[in-house]
Amino acid sequence: MKELILISGGGTGIGFEVAKACINKGWTPIILGRRKDVLEKASKELSDCPNLVVDLSEPSSKKTVETFLKTFKDVKLRGLVNNAGIYKPMSLESSDQENWLEQFKANVLTALNLSQACLPYLKKSRGSIVNISSTLGERPIPGAAAYSASKAAMGSFTKSMALELASEGVRANSVCPGIVNTPIHDPNREDVSDWQESLKGMQPLERVGETTDIAPTVVMLLDDSSSWTTGALINIDGGILLKS
Image (tube, rainbow, N blue to C red; front, side, top):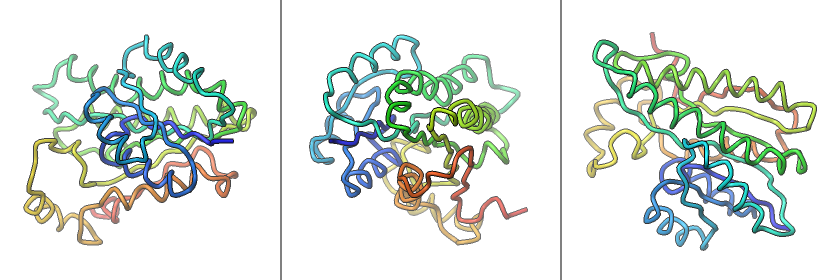
């Protein structure tokens, strides 16, 4: 029986790396996202894994995902990775409600909609949910109030999920990366060397993270080896939270 892992934002960055790691575990990733061209390209690189183009911030996405899942027969939904998100920094003084709503929809409501669609399957498999958050949810920086608040909300949401779903055997945990080299910071950036060098001094381990630094912990939380772990917020940040 195939074991499926749904991954939102699976076409690039951390989501794509998690999908690769899932294949190495013998699981079948299903990648979800808003951009058809990105998903189709990623799917080909991921052994032609299934993909679904959907805007998970919209309430109608729940029905779309439910209909999509019904097309799979004799499978087990092992886990869900809520990785979709955006980062749009803006000063507190100049930020507006549109900016806040956009980031909360992309960073929190996507996880709510996808989780609700998947819960019947996860309850049946006693599966695992992994939410990708950020260290900014614990320690904000200037100019990112909306993003930081949305990631703090993700942390609280993860703990609520863990409490409510424990009796069903479904686990929920969160991985909180520090600064990782992904398109979320600047999707049009080509040369990352200057960017990485400028941030090196902030890191006790003296380098920006890579997606390969994050994926192993996500896979561990999806695996049965972590069957007694739920409600955890795990920082993977090169030690940046230790800096005063």
